[in-house]
Length: 417
Image (cartoon, helix red, strand yellow):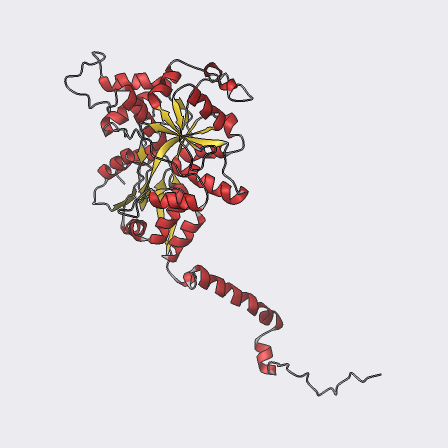
């Protein structure tokens, strides 16, 4: 039998041992943990967060409306952390941000210009602002309902490249509003002819609360603009005869109030309901933003290798763009606002989240988004030939319309800041 034993003093070849004193300094469990620590350091270097625990992290407090979903995005949070900034979001509707106290906040991020103008007017210092992206207001619906509206003569499908089912339809708001005013039901406009189901519910749009939400306030502006012969209430021509001897702004408000289905939700919660498995049962037509739909389609393509052909968009005509505005209230807010204007990675991520980022020249607002959609094999929406854009009422007129339609409570304000 071979002798496999070695003399007690012989060490195996190619084996090293720490000297006795060093073994005492590095217990076995510490030595075993060294590869894990090295892996962690490599991960920090790759992510760009190496040495971050030793850097100063500035927490920026902000009241934000539906566009807070941008700052909730994990990739956006990682990019901001590279610059030493963490954003703490205090969620509130755009109009609530505009009418309530901003004490203790570093920035605010209302989803549209009416609220942004109210906020800027309240400040007692020159403020730095950024409008990093825009997104159209749209109506999210389901294919059977869109086909029903096409058959009713108030919607038109956009043609997808290469044919097939479209994701997008242009909606004639004047004709659509007529269906609502006439209290038509879905079955009353032959929904059952385009679906295996029936629906005796009224043709309505499910909206968030006009008292809080920029989306609902913007939709209300569309209704008021169309009802007022394609001009903003309060800007009527002098030679135009008044409908009544009363207040022309409240006259329009009274006419559009029955056309809006108030739900009291935040705009992002409205989108969550639409994209849920029970979205069609919750509401056939929901008020959302385009970027929410486009991000859903990209995510659906990545997960299922196909578009979500069940959900489709209605683009209202006349149309309304929403312009979120980041408004700084102090030096920490200035840092975040500057980054939103200058950081290429933050702009790139906005495109990936479905926003139309504000560029100029060849890097146009829509073209980079369109390129991203094509890259992920999602149909690109095409501009409606009717480019009529809604002129929003001035702030005073819009406030009066919102208060009349929503019976809004008085603002809980305790000073400019």
